Amino acid sequence: MPAETKKPLHDLLNRLRKDGPNTAKDNRGMQVSSDHDGLDCAKSPTPLVSRDAIQAFARRHRWMSVSARILLIFLAVSCIAVLVCQWLHLGTNEAVQIMPDNTRVLLSISPPPLQLGKLYGIQATSSAFGVTAQHIKTTLLEGMARELNLNVEKDILPWLGFEAVAAILENDRSGTEVLIALAVRNSAGASGFTQKVRDQLESKGRYFEEEDYHNVRVVYQRTRFSDSTLAFAQINHFLVIGSSVNALHRAVDTAQGRHKSLGRNVQYRKILSQLQGDRIGYIYVDGASLTAPFTSWEALARIATNGLQSAGASITLNGLGIRFNSLLMYDPDALTIAQDQAMQLPTNPNRILSVVPSNAVFFANGQQFGSRFDQLLAASDASGENILWRIRDMESSLDIDLQRDLFQWADGEYALGLLENPAGLFGDAAIPFDLIAIIETHNLDAARQGLQHITDAVATQAGTKSVDVIIGGELFRVSNDTSGRLTFGYGSVEGFVVIGSSKEALEVVAEAAKSPLARSATFSALATQLPTSNTGYAYLNVDRLMEALYLQIPVSQRKMFDEQFRPYIDWIRAIAEADDTATGQRGEVRSSVFVLLNSQPRE
Image (cartoon, rainbow, N blue to C red):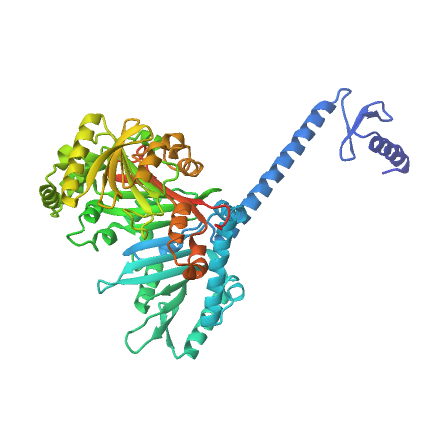
């Protein structure tokens, strides 16, 4: 290019770089733009794209670029979180693929991150729970250090993941075996741990052998009297410990697909799909393991388990305590009429809670007491355990008719409970409680007549005498033995029949409306965690139970009780249970149990 041409063009480029995207005139009077990274282009007098359009495009481009970066960062963080959770086994359920299909009972613990956070939160807010956890940890550490010379923080925690499973399964000889699977995030660390355990046991005279079973190294203990009593191996990122080498073989076969796993079991999958997802763990029980142990005389157990296919419960933490949501699944075609009726009870209005004392140690309530007893009799008769003749024998000896004197008028709600009484049940200080029964009736006159007939019959047999007394402004009839001690009493409070084993118990129930259980802080906290549509509650105040029992312990033994037993129960304030009538299908029974934590240890 000639020198005389270079200079004007060079001057024009410099001017355009200085002015930015603005247009300028060249030596021919034409408009020139520098929008293309310094390359000059001859343009028509009017620009093809306006400056505002270019700036708007640039802003959109920058926004899209920022959004893409945020999305990429989010995806990267999510992938890392998933990988970390998988590595730590947080919220996983992989060990079930190692457990054989004939597993009868399974306990799985694998908290997801949210539940793990709640666990640490409970330890921070409930000092009683923290004390219990520390006591268990200390006991475990001392036991391992003493027996196997192990240090949990050095020998176990570096390789241990957050998933653990314990299972009971059938063996080939109609017995049971145990498998325990612990998640491994460092295979070398787990190998070092098992080698140290083996060395310690061999130093104490135990003898171990090894074998290669389908490319898996299995270590097992040999004894003089049996093939093996302990075996372990690493299988699919789990350290699996079995009660025999045969159990380990089945775990290997299951993991490698030669044996059907529990994870493919139809009943197991049905139960698991119905359990709460955000859980720290769950329990699964095969129906056969519940029905097999019961003998012919255990009518109640057989009635409850007839037709049962499987059962399960999820374990969930929240700020107040621990909730167990359970599910029982029955074969609808195998249910008896009595079972079917019992599973279709209507929702209980729970009016009776207004007359249950707030200081009750225990109570359980329901409705239609007479109908429930009739169903029990029918079910026991159908199962071959006829207990009706025993009742008839008692009625004959006392000259009473329970159907007429009790069940016929007991057509509403009912509650059975325990109250504290240091004097003891019927004067026996070794049982520091009183019994109470509260029954709703729509025929109070029939109730009074029936109970009077029962009272007079018992008085004739036991040699007691009955008198009328005023308690809490209401007329009660009580029976006393020869020493003047009350053995039985009944009356009515706000339309409910009240039966008690002492005058003190009757007085507490008569005044219960002023401070009923329904307004108790402890029970209210429990009720908020349980299904509101239910057939009734079962409630245990552990604080009051501990206070009553502690006074029965000799002073010389209380120190031992405080050291060896109290730490394991001190963190529990109360427990309650309620079934759920709002959900479920025929053949399903759902219920919830909530364990309310103590914020402070008991004094």
